[in-house]
Length: 523
Image (tube, rainbow, N blue to C red; front, side):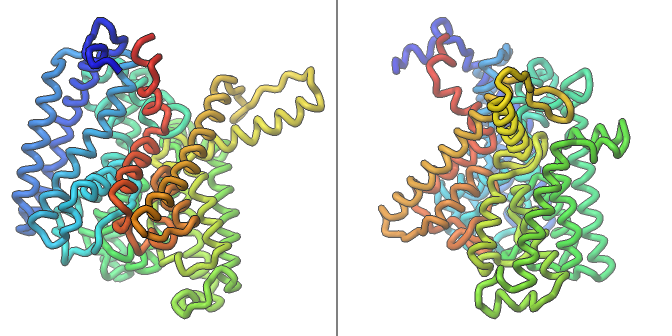
């Protein structure tokens, strides 16, 4: 590629300076997020220099990038570049607290740049995979762990959606930016102004977060969750709604009572539901929720998979012949349903929490969970993976093909909620799903080969779960990457590849891949 071709505005169809300038604007304002852990650091007297330096660094990076083009003119092509770069630059800036804490603290693994970047990208993309060797407030400061949770909350509804909601300079072209970032086939405009739509989505997101926070802390005050203090209530509310799954507890939600697990389940379902649907429920009544085809399919899949897993756990066929696996159940219906519902909802919504170490479950049960990693939540939710609406459209289009095979002259559009779907949208859904599966299978081969290269044995099942968990932003997998383990033992090249998977998975592949095509830059 000719370097002069890249640097010339006259020859390029993409004004990359405008994209970089707006990335700087977003980073500059997002630097304010460092004030939250800084306040916590001051309160506990821990890691204050870490967040002072990080705050100043983020401001400098933001202002420097913003000066590349102080008066940007954002077009369609610039929007794709701006969204992709924003998520990459934000993760790079967000890794700084991990690096500093790793150098001066007790967790030396975070001092390695690839590990700090992995943790940061996993946070902002709400993946929830970790390379922390020891997740404990004895090893890490309250401020650093809260930063870890806060990155997920910021990335959940979307950094660009937040920017469109609060920055006037992004109100023009905001719909296109939100479309490029938002999970699913497209974002629904709820109000005449796209900035107001972004604010509505973020207010709903904030409202549910605060509600969960109050309920979790309420359980603590009632004596139903002794270790769910205010810090833990805030931390878990910040990572449930973005379907992130980062917890300051090494054993995830297993560390808390059954009451806590039951409270978190409905909030994970809320997080996996199209947030636009809640707007329609408020404006048009609860009937909108139950008439929605996507929500019906989403809850139906969860119910079926929960019933399958609960039956296996209750009967003992879903467990390995280990005392630690059998102990919570022993024919206990409540425990069977609770752990099955919690784990199915956590996997399908790509939250990544664990109510127990499901590594001790039987192979058939774990394959049910692996299947759930490919389903995903609703479009317009904070969940990752392929999304339930795409599967609904694929199934309906396959039924249509069977019908038209028998009746070749029939005109039968694919309908969703009674409305016909444009054939271009159907093709786009097939293209995305195929690309997703191609990336998955190629990723599995590369991860296994890279592990063998350094003498690290990795089974095919572990590799499949690791790739599915990072590409789908799920978090934990099985075996060595199970819910109570980490991705720390992977070689550097595999970690960087998984960082790439988390990045393109959060942006749903196409907005990143389009940047690699010559047609995007020249024609």
